[in-house]
Image (cartoon, rainbow, N blue to C red):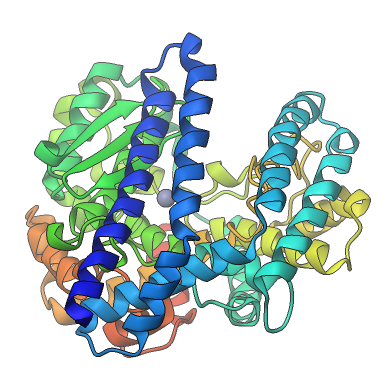
Length: 498
Ligand code: ZN
């Protein structure tokens, strides 16, 4: 009896997943190949799809299936699908359709206002929109419910199960030591020459090299693509069809090479989901934080490591003979690992990056609780930049107006970037421990051993474990900062002669 119920439930859940995957494909298309004339039609297509998905996520049938299946036995896959669909069902039902519509409308208008405010570098032109969005998000948090503070409900959307207090604890632990280390680097006696990666790198050669690197680490081009978009991303419609994008600039090598390694890291996670569970929670990524741990692991822990380039550097020199022909491996390694506090988050190196996130997390939390008035955001932003990174942005465009997230109403999203970095450090340390000669394998270009480890320990589980539990199971430790701080000190100390 419960088998038949589960089969019906499972078919319905797959269809919800399929609606989401069609949405992803359309989104990918609108960022890559859609002609401008398709914009209005695409908006209609997307809103129809999300309405259909919303109807199904909130349907009383789904509620009945969940009630019946929760009291029945089931294996781990069933339990995962039932538990995670309960979460989706509750969140979707608690949010009134009217409120969702108001948030969507307010963010469309806010995005326009933000674009103009940023161009004029005038935060006050965006402040009323941010006030409105905060108010709507507080209402949403009240509907969804939370234990300690409204921010919990927002964070939970992107990082299921994580509380504000947990995130605040790890960030508080990270803040001081990291900021102190950045200060020591700024005063270091030795500095790598970062200009090497700003020489002329022909676009075609970059594209060929980026593809080669993505394929080398295991990204399967028979189940994926690499295209160009303004803002790079990875779209995971199905483990059999993963779309990566990047951008190329001929006077800067890093965005394409490390951008592709980053997106391919996301892509490997998606390709590593089991086909038989595709489109259901048992075959989907755990959270944005865990997703980011996979991209950062390949981009930084592997892609910016010395062993990785010991194996690949001759090929890089052959691909870019004019720019790198006379550059020694150590100089190149220094250039791709230069640390320099910058006002702009997306340009930040792997040491300073988390400080940008801590700043945003602290401000969002204070805004949501009403402790920080929106009009005081620019001053608070600049004071925190000074405190954390020792610099002050030139203007609002370079400061509190730089990111689109708030305009999209995506409050609670930022912490996942830093959580991902911390998880990546823990996962990588665990992989190293388990694969004794990992450095040597990376040097020889044998990436499969690491990918297999990630597949077995992380990818194949889909959403079976929430992030915190996954970290504990894989690393034997709770989510923390030790692995990350050890890693940056051990890596960047020698580069900067500390
Ligand atoms: Zn990412």
